[in-house]
Image 1 (tube, rainbow, N blue to C red):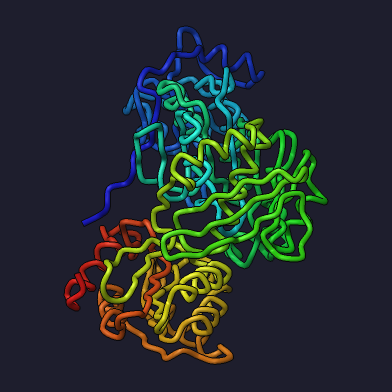
Image 2: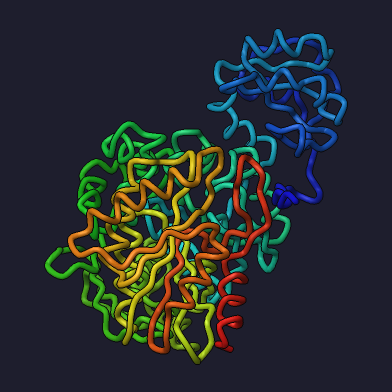
Length: 514
């Protein structure tokens, strides 16, 4: 069985726009008659095509999207946007063809025009960084709701339009999907939108056509070196978010060394925040209490004003994410006192963070957390948080993605082994890689730990979590890192329905823990 691909969210009542108007607005080359042609949407995929769409044919690694123009026409596309090579491929369809040098580079601005997303836009917030993007986004959305705003969210985990929730396909959707999403949000009177922006989104023009009111940087650590040659290239892939074309104001965490570099190279006004003792910043975060149910902190600003609250999740790094969200709101024009008053009603930031150190166990037996972390730095922070509330052993279960950055696997396993007492290495998304080979690399990395944990290699993950639970006792904690909120496993290109949450709960029940 293959997991259903989440839908693209589009406006329910799109307004038609003249193709001739589009060509005129952007001074574009075209072929065929434009007379009377109206477009109501934009798509890159024939699978997501709606009648009235402008079909965008992009060059790909193995084929050109314009090769599917005839299929797009059969599905109701009324025009094609492509490059010169694609124009030749689409010529026989008889559809009007609009020609640009780079369809991907043009997609954001053209989608914004089609969907009118630059006309009276909502407040727009964006967060980038290796870790913490999703958590910061959910916490920010939570505060906005507490302030009484109708909100929208685009994150790795979900898309939100008010109370509508849909599972995400990509961390940041393609530009055409992003603008369609914003148009749908406008129909629902959304006033503030929070967007998680990956490095790939910036490199691949997925947030083109958007001007964010406030952008934020969490941190940078080893990840995605399958897409970028080295950490330097990865850093510079993040930096464009801090240009005037992308953001008006910025908030930068100095909790990783790259934060100061963002400040130094930013081309927009930025303010700084730090939760690291001894690191000076305009805003400082002090952890005041750590419990299994929450982490409390005080945020102090440059003028001595402060706010004390808590996040409903374990981990000092999660408190830092909550504080970052608050400063983003201040930079957007919200008064700190108003934010404090809104949070006082419940005594904390009200937010549910799916798959982020999410406890799925009951009051008896070992504590079991499911987490999305999949980098060495994420493992380091989350294991430290779990250790804080564990009186017994810390048991970790994890696997690594196939066909993704293999250079971090040794470090992931080493950090996992050093931070746990028992380590269970298993499978995650092998994709088209050999799962046993991935595990072997992780076993090698675990052996590099200064004090290696007790090691078990178990496949598949359904068995691995049951082995971990069998090894656990009252007072122990189990951290299952990697799957988090995801509801599938990717095996040889097939998305098989799968829930780490449900497998973990079943394993506990089978072991006699309610």
